[in-house]
Length: 318
Image 1 (tube, one colour):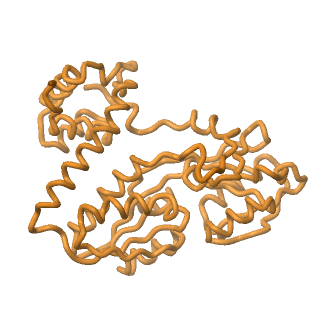
Image 2 (cartoon, rainbow, N blue to C red):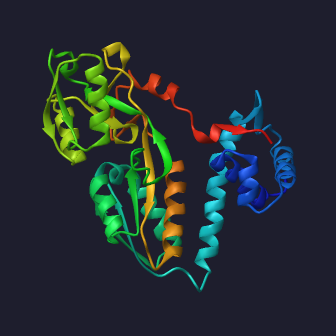
Image 3 (cartoon, one colour):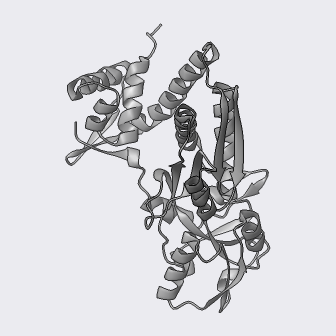
C-alpha cells in the first residue's frame, strides 16, 4: 500500500494556490523558498503527476494540480476538524456575522455547517442586510465579521471570491427584446446597479427601473415572472433564469468580487476561525447546472466564464 500523503506538503501546496506565489507561501508556512520547492517536488513524486507547468516566466497549476487542490483542502479541513473534536480548549462564545441575503442563500449553509462541526460551543448570530448596511454595522461595532460585495471606491474588504456578474432574464419570456428594457435593481447606491446602468448608457439602450429593492427574493421574483431584467452574480442564479450575453445585445459587466470585512472584536480568535471557514467554504462551492428539477439557460455564461481567471491558476515563478 502506498504511504499516506504528507499534510505539511499539502498545506504548502494550498498556500501556494491561495497566495499565488511560492515566495509568499514560504513566508506563510515559515519555510525557506528552497524548502517549499523541495516539498512540491516530493509531492509531485508522491502523486506521480506534474502539479505545475511553465507559462512563460510564470508557473500555473496543471489539470492534475487543480484536481489535487480540491482534495488537499478537504484533507486539511478534516484534519483540523478531527483535532478540534479532541481539544478541551475549543473556542467558545458568540460571534456576529452579516451577509446580504443573496449570498446567504448560496453560501451560508456550507459556512455554518463547517464552522458548527469544528466549533460546537460557538453561537452564531446572523444578520442579513445589503452591503452598505453591513459596512455601517461593522463601523459601529455591531458585527464581528461580514461577507460583502467589494467596492473599489472604499476598498473596505479582503476579496475572497470572484464571480461573473451576469445579465439575467426569464427563460419563458422575451423581456430582453422589449424596446424599453424593464429593469429590477438594488437601491441607487448598489454597485451592481451602477455597473449595469453604465453599460446600458454606453450602448444607448433605452431602459427604465421598474423595481428597486435590496431583497434578492424580490429581484429574482421580478426576473422569473418576466417583468424585468436584472444583473446577478453567478452564485445567485436560479432555475428558470436565462443568462444574456453579447449575442443578445448586452455588453460585458465587471466581475462581482466578494470580500470579508472584520470589525473590532474582543475575540479575534473566533473571527479568524470563522474567516478561515468562510474561505474554505467558498472554495468548495460551485454553481450547479440544475437543481430541484429546474435548469438554467447558460447561453451567455460560457463567455463570462472564459473571461474569468481564478487567482490560484497563475503563479509567479519559483
